[in-house]
Amino acid sequence: MKSFLLTIAALFCYAVSNAQNNALAIDDFVTTVAVIGTDATINVAVTYEGEETVKDFDYTISSPAFEDETFHYILKEPLYKSRIPVFLNLPFKSGTIARMEDASITITKVNGVENEIGNDKNVSKGKLISIIADSPHKVVMEEFTATWCANCPRGIVAMEKLQRLYPDNFIGIAIHCDDVMSANGFNSLLKQVEAIPFCFVNRRYKCDPYWGYTYGGRFATKELFDGCLNQPTEAALQIRSAIWNEDSTSISITTDATFQYDNENAPYALGFVLTEDYVSGPGSKWNQANNLMTDLEFMLDEDFHKFYYGDSYIKNMEYMHVAVGGWKTGNGYEGSIQSPVVAGETQTFNKTLDISAVKQIQNKKNLKVIALLIDTERDRIVNADQTLISEEDVAAILPKTTDSTRKVESIYGIDGSRRNSLSRGVNIVRHSDGTTKTILKK
Image 1 (spheres, rainbow, N blue to C red):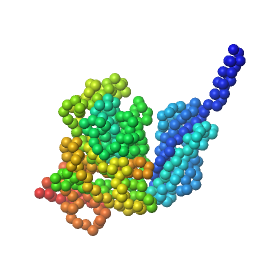
Image 2 (cartoon, rainbow, N blue to C red):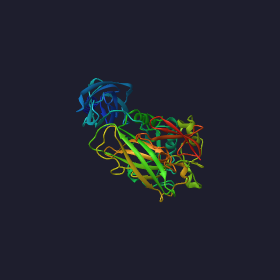
Image 3 (cartoon, rainbow, N blue to C red):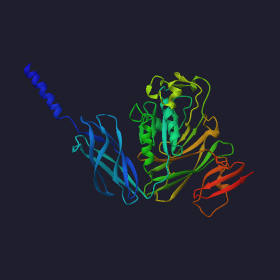
Image 4 (cartoon, rainbow, N blue to C red):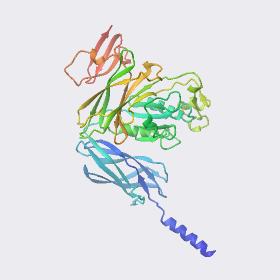
């Protein structure tokens, strides 16, 4: 018996002595964009797998674009053992030439000692894109939801919050799964979804639409949204026009994409989505299943009151951002972006979407066209734009100009309300160069 206890004690001591007390893993960062010659950050996920808390660590960034750099990172809050990834913004100095380079991050030390993680889990690989200037950009949440999904009200509220917090930078696409609002054109995305509620944020983060990766306790997708919004993008994207044909069975779309770096290749393409707001209908198939009534986390949040104080099925719902059709939403239209891409040059793409077979549309006035600029090699959304659909080409009505770069940016009524096309009465047209023109339409 004594020898048995000594053996157990020895094994315990061996296990303790060999425990990974300082083991920090890091995921691939895929792609990071930074303006040349600036202090920038790489947003990357780390996971602590050790036994002690992590207060600081050292990492080295390697790339042909610059000499290896080593940094010491002090955490604002200690990391504890967890299988949940934590996203950090790791500082680095960007390159001096507008181009794409391979790069890697290696976590060398944790709490001042050698990182004990094994199997190359201490190395993160990706691409660094150095650009000449940042571009305005919008962030896309593709939310996977259903009326029969009792947890999906989390995603409905998340979309409402993001729309309110970021009215000019948020694009929502609610992709319904096996319910009355299901639409065609999203099969390649649905194959990546194992359960709902679920979402993609710029297809970089794939997680719960409200909790993010935390799974309980807070609105963590806001932090992921901020991470995408705060990082520069390598291309501007603008829907110059979206116009109905005469019988409203198709939409002619013109998009402009302007890149901020040179690349002999063009791993990019454009896809399109049609969404509708204020979608509703009669009968039980339109009721939203709901099981948030007993979750105290949502009791004090007014955005959740409809669900927390509601029944197991919520009637008279009006659904927003409903995807009614998708066109090449996975990898985009081949040839929509041509090689090479050149810094400062604009590529224009014209596409007509046939919607004659789309049966889900209720009110065409509530439709929006969304253009997605997709990185086809790394499965991410680079930029996006959205607009309502006009009955006429405003640019064609305006007086001709010799400035080919000047475009119609927005139209307002005399009361300041924004319009999607010229309306009867006084119209104030704002151009991309900042000039305005007043047009009277009879």
